[in-house]
Length: 179
Image (cartoon, rainbow, N blue to C red; front, side):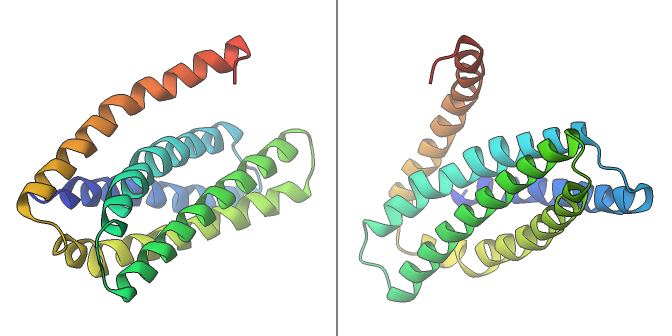
């Protein structure tokens, strides 16, 4: 199995969350009320699963290993663009959190920001995922031998095993006041 297979499987789960977010946008548009708990859970999913787990494997393993190789300039540009898109997704998620916090404090204008940012995320992820799945992942595997691909798959598994511990250690450290 190619090491990109788990990344593509992760994309399917992210797409499911995007579908759920579309439904939430429709619901809040009908009711003119945001659901802060939904936003908290969606943000946790985006930050933990989509960004830290999924983008983490891409940036910390796949992109790093790829850029260590003599790759075509067009592929270097794609890596740079995908990395920038990850930064953009983080910024959008931060804006959603800030808008939710203002909304909870009674800022009526924050409602429109919540909708706008959720709509941006719902537009962003399908385009980003298609770029990776259909135009990048498979061509970039040609730069790696089968042995290198096997090592990369192992590194992805190790990354996942460590990530859950990292997440919940940070939860405890937050409560303890440690940075």
